[in-house]
Length: 172
Image (cartoon, rainbow, N blue to C red; front, side, top):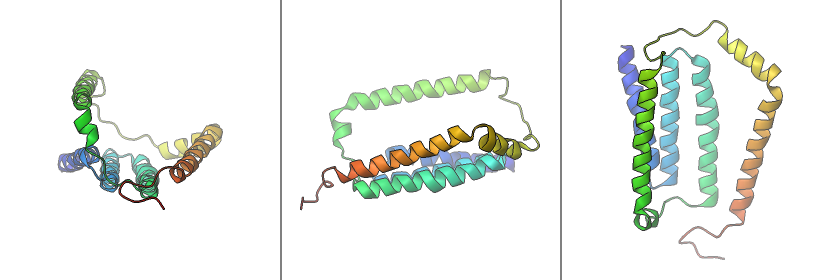
C-alpha cells in the first residue's frame, strides 16, 4: 500500500512541476507550484519525516506561493508572451539538453549511492535537535535570513511600483 501512495504523490509532484513550466498563466503556474509542494510534503510524510512535511507546508506552500501570487497580482502580468519561444528556439533546445543531462546525473547519483536501497527510521528526538540547533546555535543566521527575505519583498514592491503599466492597459 505504501508503494501506491508513493507512486500517487510522486506522479502528482511530476504533474505539478510540469504544469509550473508549461503554464502560460502566472497564477496557474503558482497554483501548480502549490500542488508540487503539497505532494512533496506528502512524500516526506511517507518517509516518516513529519517535521519536514509540516515545514514544507508552512514555509513553501503557505508563504512562498502566497508571496509569488501577491507579486504577480501586484505587477499585473498574468500571461507569458509567446515571443520568447518564437524569437529564441535555441533556448528551448538548450533547456531540453540540460534537463536530459540533469536527469542522467540524478539517475547515476541514485544508482551509485550507498543509500539507494537503504531504509531507515527517523532518529528519536530529531525535531527537538533541529529546534535546539535552530534557535540556540544558529539563531543569528536564521534571523538574518528572515531580514533578507523581508528586504527582498520590500524591494520587489518598490520596483513593481516604478514599472510601466501591464500590457494592454493604457497609461493614465
